[in-house]
Image (tube, rainbow, N blue to C red):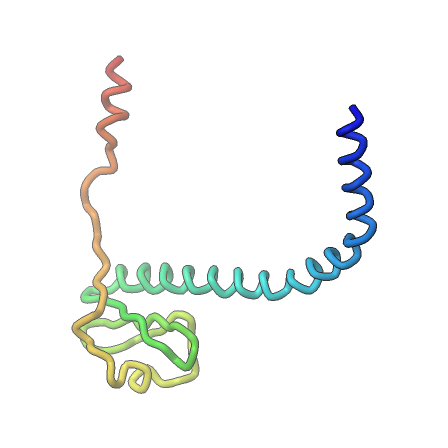
Length: 125
């Protein structure tokens, strides 16, 4: 027990000494972390939205381009750019100028049934 009491008293002393400093660091560090997380989430949702948009088109494809420091997914119908995710004010023709259009991504539509063979084996038991 004497070891536990000493450890507990050390924790209390350090908490009193460094607690306010840690609280301020967490308080000020939370906003940049939230901003970064929101930016990453919006980047992922923009890609998913562009992929869903391209899947709905007859000859749909998409390509990642940069508008300053913002990654933008441009959706094509054939060879014509028709939309961007996220929406930007820069004209689409200016966004794709200088990029290799051969590197566009075409959505893969999987028409196979989603039957998992392991589930079928489990059902037979």
